[in-house]
Length: 114
Length: 112
Image (cartoon, rainbow over all chains, first blue to last red; front, side):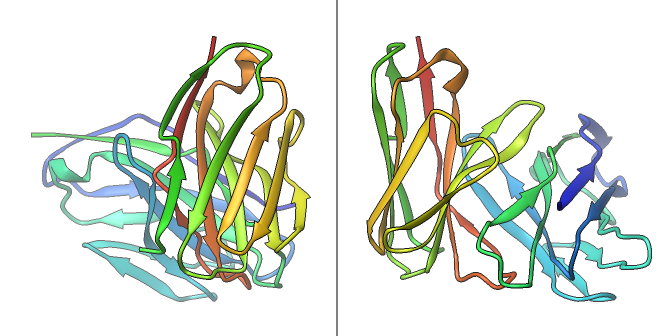
């Protein structure tokens, strides 16, 4: 079956530091990959996505590249802000047309200190 | 936003009572999902629907049932609530085929 593994944290960084959150996956087919962000008390919001190998998703200064050879989709940002403090989820979706939704990692709690 | 509304947003209920959570969408998405979020577990799929009256079980379906009588509404019922079902429940929708899911704001359920 499909699975997603990501560092759980909490990850604590100072403002303007470089961020990497690792994500690796196991899938039987050719999945689409996603990063979601959850701010306190809210639902999940799509941050970025990539649908095929070597695609780079980007949004709000965050980037992630779909690496099929290493089955990875690491999230990066060059200079984090206090407002980036949130929980980040890596997820995959079976592009083969399966109806059974996204498979999520356990989430990484990111804390940015001023 | 996909226009997903969950109700209620918060609920406290007693052990052994039935509870129904509602998800309503305005985007006409074919697929709808119920997840629960717990510390250390991330999001786990409870049930999903691939059309009106078409539903199937997810990873953690024991003790839960669902119904979808209209495209826009997906109900989750805890038949007899237990303390282990204290959680935050999220509804999501998608158009399928490997696309992203859109999430509601969540329902915090406490079973005492």
